Image 1 (tube, rainbow, N blue to C red):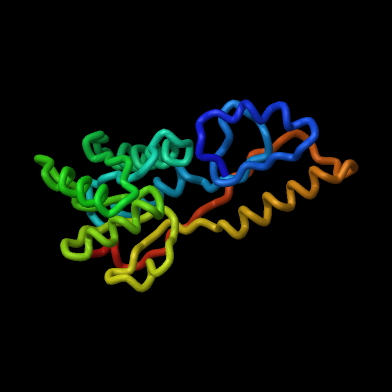
Image 2 (spheres, one colour; image 1 turned 90 degrees about the vertical axis):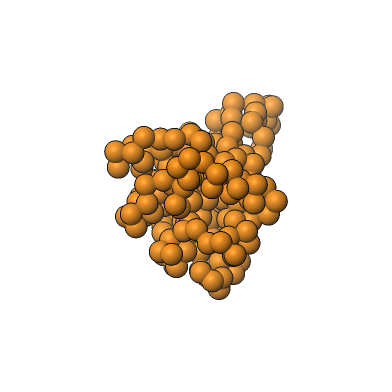
Length: 205
């Protein structure tokens, strides 16, 4: 489950060790990979907020240079463009992984000449930080990735739901098949798992 930006050093291992990437695709290496449909999930979340009448939707994330977030940013942008809305990059807040960072990002966003009326949160870390900061001054938001107690908060948080159990099982099955000399597997494959919207209360404030 990579966090770096160059995995080419693993090339020398591929001849004798099966390697499967999960959650994020490798950089500089071709191997079996299982990821979620990050771009489509971000598009779905943003479209859902658009359907509630929002036109100024902020993107709040963490490490936007990683492949998961670059795809989620693009999904956010695509949904806005399809709705005929110009993408305003001032609505992007990155490195939001703590309550302090979330509070700072919200202060900046709310101080814009045209502040956002809703937020797409690109990962569970950002969502948990936002949920805490927004308790006293709520703003509609949808998060990418469910997290513990998201459904018990007030308001309960609408999320794009991933299926880590399925990804883990598929990845493990692929490793075991790669270990079988007569499994008949072909070239390395990239498998993209669909995500879904779990609608709760946070997007309809």
